[in-house]
Length: 138
Image (cartoon, rainbow, N blue to C red; front, side, top):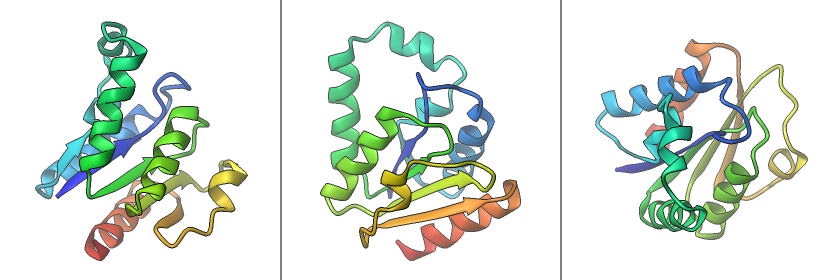
């Protein structure tokens, strides 16, 4: 099963460890992770060698072939929001997670799409439980 991993890149990298945790958790369970570069500490350098059009085309291709998307939405990101909207339009299951103490976009929080699951988490154990529950539902 292919999971698209979404998290802030240009909007801020302060949750890089969380992206890495999600990435490793998925890999350890045998999932193919698309856009795994989100968890790479060198992602800004990697993307510096690509044009914006190349990034867009690559990400849309991955969104088209993924079975589901997991997005960390604690850090506001236009790109993450776009990826979620694109996936929802394609009727793909989307798990959007955010740190319990954060205020997130009303466009995400107020979305009632049946394929969007929005969950707040309080620490790594809580996040892992949410991930496992979502993955079991696929």
